[in-house]
Length: 271
Length: 285
Image (cartoon, rainbow over all chains, first blue to last red; front, side, top):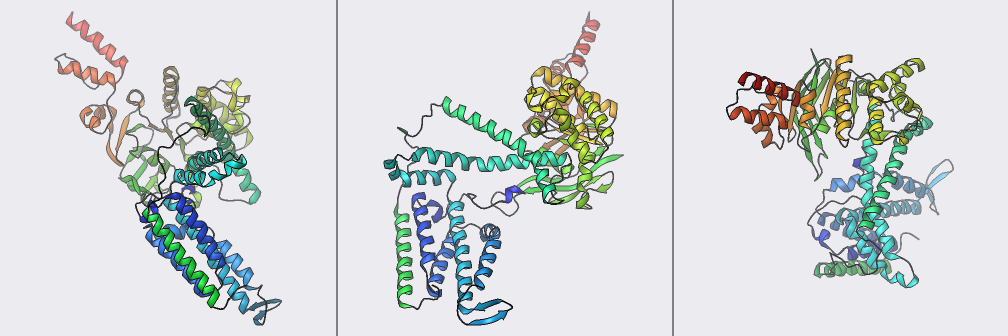
């Protein structure tokens, strides 16, 4: 069912990762992504991967949930991995028709697959441990400097909050409408592509109608509470950069040093 | 004969996640062919999950449901056929309307059954009549109807499949009092004419008292009682402990009885009460 979609789902908890400042978490995520892409040999790749796996265990969220979110992109990982396998230059190790596998190809395939997998792991960690409101709050704070260029950061953040807030609602609604149409004998699981697309019309039309209705109701409700955009608004929950965030920063810097040292002193395997 | 039987029927939401929640816990229910059963229970007591399992929309995590003696999940590929036999009208069914005209929308179910155009037309007209939808509305867009008319159109969409069992999940929620009474009367009328089984989920004890032969009481995912309407409503204290209540008129009449008035117990509707009180006055004069 649609509720099984785990990508981007918040799982409440009390782990040290949950309690980090969401701003710090976003910055750490960006840092980790940069790290994983600057690694150039197996040792540094393993170092970053190990760091992220350690963090995953620190979230105290069942590993099953992570695996579930990985399952959705397994195809992409395999696909890019296999493509890369055949695109290495140098001496071919194996030759199958016009395809050839080289040592560089194998290395590329491993790096690309591990990078994508770790990327997804790290991003699921962020969304699993941070509530959508915290996430957009943090983004608003981080993007604040852009107001200098007349970019309406608050409005963008508000739109994101609302969009995120309505993802589960709309999923639930879709589920309900699908059930209702199935109860009237809708057949969405069989037939060719065109038949299946046609079978979705009875779901999509009511869904659009209700999305517009909800949007209008929400706009009215916001106006009733005198919402006028970001200027002059204060926050109920203020973000706080604390000791735990400092430890996180220290750990990240340590890993960064490790990656740089490995990259400098060990021979590069890729690029 | 029992048309529906369940055996240790259970359903758990989100099994294996932190959100795990048991919605139905080992239900053993028998529903006889042709009876009108009311289903009551506090919010979150598992009524909606139960009715969705009964027509095969969700698969039980354990236990079985038998329709006319055969397990409905015996061949999962054939589950659509079960859905034509057990019609389910969801809460706020008007949000499922999608076609250009009301007629086409009501015809959606019968068309999925693969009936001929002539049969479909016939079924649409009789379903519209049963749900009290004026025939001139059939050619209109469902989005141009009033709230009450939309509700009727959506109910007609399920009735048009002519199911052996009709399940309605709070069909009167959000309607005005007059709309409620008319819709309930229509459902009762439908039950009488077609002689098929009807299951009605409702929060309104008055609605249930007016229509149901028997009542299934759900509490925290379990079936607490499945008895005839009078018996269930004579156990007011137990119901109140589950966050439910008896119809107001039943409570008033049993209060009068307790204060020494010589009147029978188990009064369920205002009409019954009026005639009982009139008879009482006749006697005491």
